[in-house]
Length: 376
Image (cartoon, rainbow, N blue to C red; front, side, top):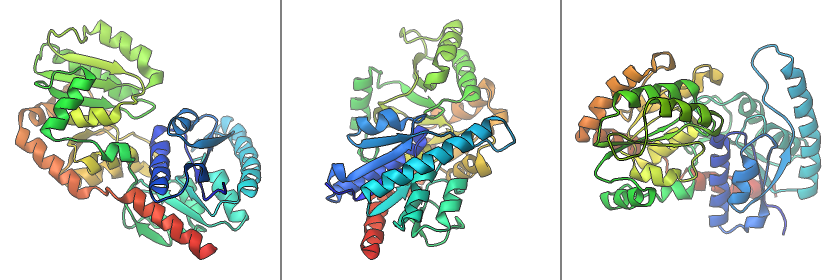
């Protein structure tokens, strides 16, 4: 089977999930699953998430370059150079009709190799501000699929950020919520809050959530599902135990996990999300119409998480809390009124839906096909 498309990029779940969304859209449009191949990083989550989704992946060395002078950057540059050389061999061997890159250090080598081989490249930029790799490759790409107007990338088409079909299938109706709660073992009569720092977790947010939950420990009307990230799980578990948090049915029903494979179920069950403002998170909240409290990651490149969160906050779909203000007390102040006013949550959810792009993955898949046809 010839290779139609190489999907390039990875690292965090926020990079992998959009790439998987585009790959699944290509399959839905009639391309054989074996004709869609992933190229990512040995250090990234694509090593497990891509095979689980039924696609093959080639893993290359490399790590991100820090935005300051460090000794680690010398090793990072060597790793990226090696990855570029190996990516060139991979692209020459497969000869895809198109390369679709979602950016990041894992997306640069295959996209760069494709440009050298005169294979058309489609850049998928799902943050409010394109990352460094996307800005560089995007200058030479055949097309740039962007989440927001005004990206600054040439040949740009506003598609919105791609969301996986499994997320788009989430049923947030009252019946769907009850079914999701039953599958998760939650009491559907309780309000459900999902707190998540993304696939890698977020230390300050985790600490604030545990502190906030401790003050609400006696609330028997509330369940909180805390996705802490695998690397932070042990520390959060210790802090939660020390704070007396549990799922014993007496007071707050507190559930803790590291990386969560059941995110679609949680998005169906929850009444509110408290989390970081990565592109995938923001895209899923908008596509499903979920009200949220967003705490952008400080120091993210070009402060893109703040701009992601601001897009929802300006539309009335979210409340933005700065990371430096994120404490247990501040979360209680913000979340309390949202949980007590169902009409306000409903209004925020409707506002989020108006900002969503449910067909983004299909639009990007169609763009990749169009680019490939023109090149042929």
